[in-house]
Length: 355
Ligand code: GTQ
View 1 (cartoon, rainbow, N blue to C red):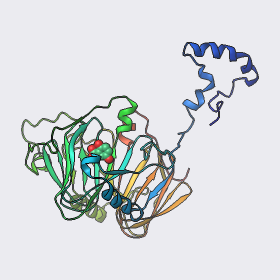
View 2 (cartoon, rainbow, N blue to C red):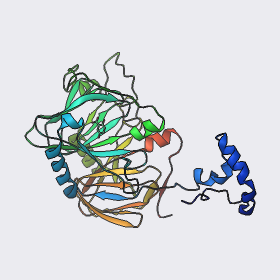
View 3 (cartoon, helix red, strand yellow):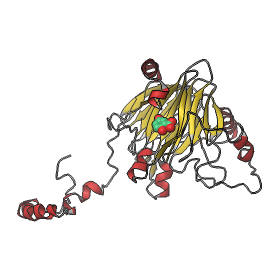
View 4 (tube, rainbow, N blue to C red):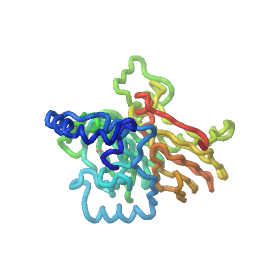
């Protein structure tokens, strides 16, 4: 980007020379002329610096294991390898607004309790019988489960199994930091005391009923573990009688049952089934989206790049890049994006088809 990239096209560049003295004096008072930057600020189309990327789990996993040899969860607080977007290196961003990391916990380890304004999602990739304790209630996590840590709730993670446990961390801290609104506390002690029995929240809100007098102040869904067993069953049943969407296949969006809106206030989450042989109509949107393959095998075209993806792989579709899927097997994919945050601000745009 050159210094005049954002200059308004009608500005007479020859005349600018004579205005430089004025610009220099204005700078002394922290003033600058908008006409030299306007079209770089208010662009005609999304200015996208993020790149499409594919993180093969087979290639990434050895680095997670090596990290386990080098540092413990107590020392690291969270033992996470950050998935960086190659177009945004060194920024801990997979898209401009979203964080993505792979967290690994070994048997017997605890990631100590803390809380922060940033909301987090966990999407389980490998392992079983590890727990997340959120606001004093434990949930056991299995592959394909979608677990939510709402803003400013205490959470710790532990592994009570005999194997490693790996999950995707998706966080909105870049949105929080854009607004300079971040706070964080460490809990005095590794784990937060239990306040509710395991399964308590599902009894309260997981059956399309709520207890008389039930109160829930947060905009985040009270359900904090959407189990893969139930999600997969829903997709399976749906595919028997509904038409698939030409762009998205059989796609289900996770919702907050109290509001019908997205399960998290800033991050949209979804699970989709692409039946074997499905070839999608290209789709683009302003919501950069992170995908994780749960089952199957597919070819994904993002802009002019093509990726072969298999179970456990992660890939990212940046804002406004067209994405197109070919399912080589029945393929199930989880995804998260900032769509809901953009929609609430009236920013979200999408296009179906090739134009
Ligand atoms: O588990 O709370 O990957 O606070 C990054 C920041 C995980 C967490 C991350 C976090 C967490």
